[in-house]
Length: 98
Image 1 (spheres, rainbow, N blue to C red):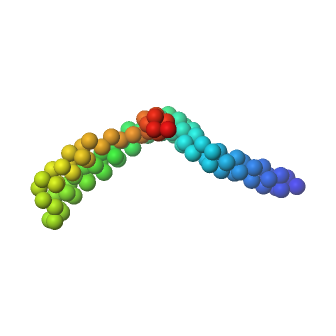
Image 2 (image 1 turned 60 degrees about the vertical axis):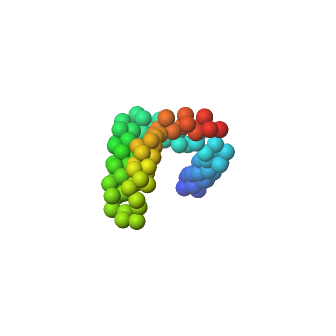
C-alpha cells in the first residue's frame, strides 16, 4: 500500500510540474537558475564557455575559402556584437519581450 501511495504522489508531482511548465514555461527555468546558476557561481563558467564558442567561430571564419574578406569582417563584427544572456539576465530579457 505504501508503494502505491508513493507512486500516486510521484504521479501528482509529475503532473504538477508538467502543468506548470505548460502554463508558465519560464517559471521552472527561473527556479533552476536561482538555485543552480546564480547561487553556485556557475554563471562565470557559462559566460567563459559562451566566449570560447564565439572565439572558435571567429577562428573558423579564416578557414572558409568560399567567403570573401569583407564578408568575413562583417561576420566577426556581428559575433562581437552578440550579447550573452545567462541566468537572471536572460529571464529579464524574456520578460521584457513579453
